[in-house]
Image (cartoon, rainbow, N blue to C red; front, top):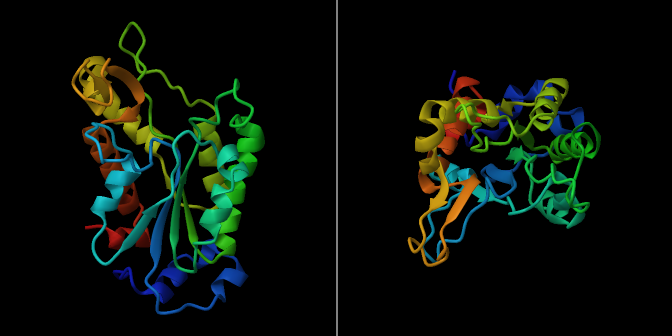
Length: 256
């Protein structure tokens, strides 16, 4: 039986196994549910007031949602799970969440930065604590958390083999999703498959590889293997939509 995205009561029933009793008894208004995206620069909305090839996958994912679905991308560039909390961004996000909303959460890339104590969070330490907290906090608000593993980086070795740069962090997210019975968008796994298909050279099209003089914002050009071009973001967003549909999440009814 199909679940309409505006039927909040049905959505609550569909997720009865993953919400707390307090959430289940939360008062539900006539307000339409809202989708929030929380994460780092691989997800966030890039400014388009000046020409740029870059987009975050969350930015393009919003374009896959059908009206009158509402979505807000709260992802911030350069943030880790730790700095997102410490800087107050998570508290501000929590002030927005209401019963029936969905929150897709992706961190890991900046948590790896051992040289930066403001952002570093060890995978089995602070990172695991933070990601578990996100799940607990969202549920406490009567909303539905969805975890996402970090999208792949473009890093091939001399033999053209793609290197996993997120070892440890993706495993923790998968483990939390299983332990907490939270839907998981395994973006790292699926974007890895995509990059392997493209290969070392063609995969540059999916990232911000910019020739000198091609864009005013990058006069000297750029070779960025972490942040996606519009094409890459579109393909990554399509992967997220595919994962949602494959798992038959109620959120699938919000997609075009």
